Length: 365
Image (cartoon, rainbow, N blue to C red; front, side):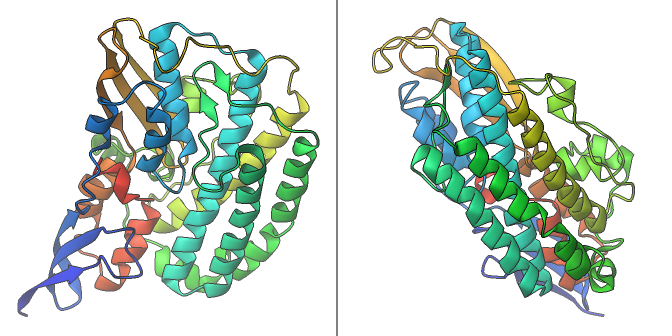
């Protein structure tokens, strides 16, 4: 048959943001895929080198609109490591609760995107509604629904308001009681199995060679999670499981996301039960005149998409000298996506991409 060049996205429902893919196809079979994450013209890493340490907090959130909270955390950790700032114990626990709420919200958004792309509109609407309940909590805590700017060097911006812990529990219970409906309507639905099983399959060796992290790695059976490997905040104070699957395909990746969502809810309950009293913020010098000592630091956290790292250098002035992020979407959206699409059907391009949990701004930064 004749080979054709096909432009997939960015307007396609299965794409994220301004992402697009150039496909070389024969019939409906993909021979080659070239990912184009778009030109957002953001240049966040360079912009951060021209702003003071505290001015970068509103900026760093924009690297991932869906889940800005782990960006706050990794930046705060890097500044704290460079400046030698200690974080109060209660603040560490609150950070963990806050980040797990962000993980729940992000996974619900991911489920919305994936179900919507496959045509499961009911599931998509349920997931978006339940994510809105998480955003209600963020709005009460921080004043913002999308960008929160809650984690600061030395702790968090403010303590939980009165009754907030109970609202978290009530919200998570209202989401949790709908899990059987999600399972009956989507996860145990034969149509989901037929569309996702065997699609975009990755072996354990390929996952390690290509730099896979998060659900993409754990879907191959490797229980790798930074919260266990290199604990931060209060993750070493409570016990939790690392959900895995074995087949390494889109079906396994979405199941890992589902299992992680439930595990995060259980983890939040455990953190709330043991939440200590005390201060939530260790004051830093005047943030507008603050000069961080010379040095370099690399820190990492487990975002909802996998390992998120930040390398930062200070030359002793009031701004970072060098900033560089290691984002999960970079290997997933470029290296891995291009490789696993070869041999797949055109109809499964969006299926594969969303199962890899790609967010375009994490790539073009």
